[in-house]
Image (cartoon, rainbow, N blue to C red):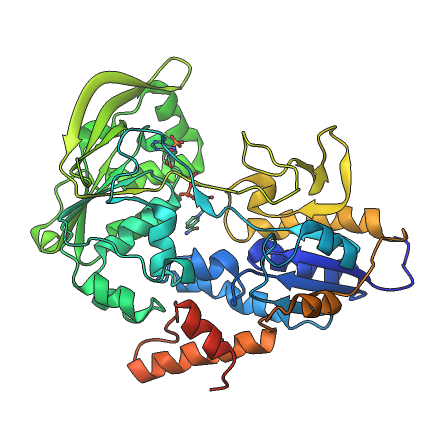
Length: 454
Ligand code: NAP
């Protein structure tokens, strides 16, 4: 690799795992001969590790400590409260840096396009997850937890998280970092039954076995799946033999076919229902039910309706059918896959050739798949290609980011500011006698904690 006279300057947009792993790869692959500025629209780093990983998944949350070390590496800086499109444009970034990596993730929910999807009480899982994870955009959301039955659509890991949080008691979550207002709302919950809906069968469930097993281990909720739903067509039965993930899932699901013991049902019941596709969310002013069509797989393995319907009397529907990325101003975007067209992280223009100096990493590059760690190799690939392109070639840097931010009068949250907020959350947990951290979720509380040393 040819060396440049000055270190390469790279802007990383988005401080979730993909962005921070990209910063780490830049440092490692240049032996530290690099300057990386990591931007986030929020005052907090770590993206989905902070706002997506469930609060009761402490070991996955601890990845934040690893990501923190990257942000503390010489040559790496954090710029919070700076939003691409609002505070900075793509052209600004190209003026200030040799290269830009977009790692903005997948921030919005997919739609099912069925009648009633917009009724009050029909909620995107992203909104619910953001709320219990203390995302400032969702801090004042209110969910009507006075309803007794809820449907969660989808059988992926996000659906499992949402079902688990609904099924746990507020006391079970007190030791986690969920904001105080979430604990309060959950303590008033009257939810008694949660239905988790899969449009295909047990062999096609996307959740991982470890996550599924946890649902069956909740002390205050009984779980059930009807034996008929466990009927596997020959192709699925074959998968349940040959595929480790499917085999594990089917094994766990088969342990739930007996009626749960009465003591577990005292508070809540979870019903996992396969072979049911949402046809309509029913209600006049708000959700009153979920109409489902029974399904089967056709000869090509595609899901098809049987013409048989049933309606569940639920008062809330949580749609957990996957996330998708949003386009970034001026950056190519594939509306079909909801990702940025790229080859190994090199952004491709409309003619299919690489766009100079612009790259992607993470979910905006490959779609919302994989676990947090998947982003490490994904980001390393992008960085290898970036350094191959940028090293040795003169670039168009025109001004420094400091000059630009100052000329706009922007109030940036620095890494040290974030540490103040971090300390305030730890201190709050101590005051409330609640676990290691209690999140501050309101914009004002967060930004004022950033400016104050505990
Ligand atoms: P996902 O794994 O893609 O699951 C989406 C679910 O929604 C699938 O069951 C899918 O069914 C269903 N679905 C999609 N469109 C539908 C429709 N129109 N009607 C009914 N059902 C529909 O997505 P996710 O749960 O959002 O998870 C995203 C990623 O984050 C995954 O890689 C996941 O593993 C990861 N994650 C991991 C953890 C963890 O490790 N603990 C926690 C949370 C998330 P079909 O299969 O039939 O399309």
